[in-house]
Image (cartoon, rainbow, N blue to C red):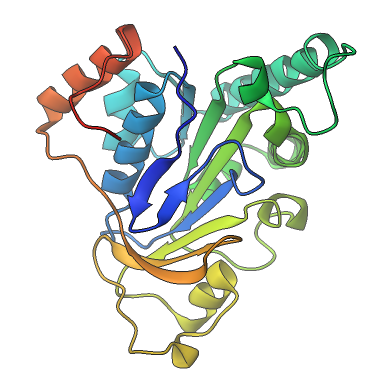
Length: 257
């Protein structure tokens, strides 16, 4: 049974897949704790009965862990295009079949129809876009824009991550749809912080507090706030078993979240 309860992050900060802030951008340099944070989010998605897909162009341990549990994980340019194409086609099919009846209103979303979300974690998005040729990159961007612009009501959610990002690196049609944003790590430039949050470190009420697993989040509900990324205290083999459990049975690990 699918659970639409928001995923708790830190204090009152949470991730609600049913809102306009579902699409997410995570900026974190190497060693900032991104993988641990993504692993937590992924596990919570599976625990709630949602569908998870991963793009891992760098063939990292994060992608390898979830690939080993049967999660659809794309690495090569061809695999990435295949996954993006499949998600867009599935989204369009859902709109044509499930959202075209008289019972569906303008604000009806996937949770009203008791459907799971389809969440794509696009890890190191810039590396993935550069993994193919010019034509493949353009097609990846086109498909990503469709998911960003049309996916929310049907539950097609994107999570983009990057170690760096310039304002021109991704189409605005994509980044502007990512209304939930995180910046993590101690070594964050003023420019990266501004791109991620719209604010400047020099204007923070206190000194910059980013570190491993710590940083700042921006959401429509809370604005700019400090956060500490949650994590799951499991060794790699135990974590795989937990993912298997969530996939196969949707059972709780005994915690309320």
